[in-house]
Length: 275
Ligand code: HPA
Image (cartoon, rainbow, N blue to C red; front, side, top):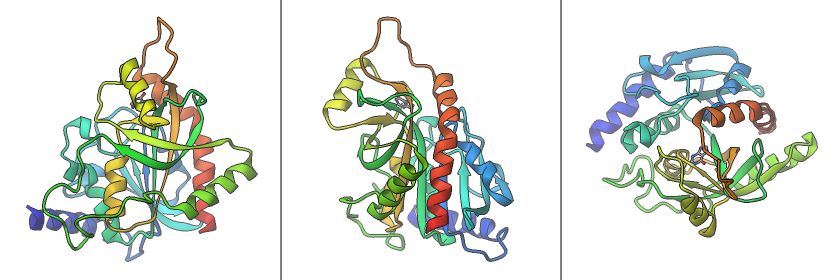
């Protein structure tokens, strides 16, 4: 399995780098639900639909376009995923995280992730941005199975999953721009159901500030390869103090993410330009 998997990663990376004229991307970016607009800010774009990349899965989730977009952002050559693969779509963790390993082979020096998340911290409001300082993984761990020694150790350290220097820089950028940026813990469940009120309450109790269905598998795989990682959640729903008639709705989540995406774009572009 592992040899076969490594061949898939190498084939996909070879196909993509063939389109880059030998240019090495500085950063890899994953754009979550409703956050794909950042890709529009990339200049001199090369757009590669996932369907053309060998061994990439198909993007089926709402608000996920399914393109790999490479080009200049903040003055640097970056590669961005406009839409990601989720475990809830039925993909195995090997498929969910394959693009991260491909980016590793392409030579990225840092990894940026974004997502839409429900805020379980009662101080959070729809449209807030949360810098991810840590996570709780309630999904299967993508590193279960034979270790890919070429990519990293059997027992990777997870004491600092999110890069502190990048976090500090983002905080100071947000402050200068007058954008409020919360800092918190992201909890990943499998979905696809949204949580029950009792589950949201439980997640808050065990230390989460925001809850979602993605990101952590990709971060674990990036950290396995020691890639400095940075993450931001857009709070798309307030998951506490429910009124009797409250319901969660996927379309509202994508709409809220779209509305907040401008702030996220500004921070990420400035951060990349300062690196
Ligand atoms: N729960 C899980 N995933 C989510 C949520 C939520 O409340 N909001 C956006 N993604």
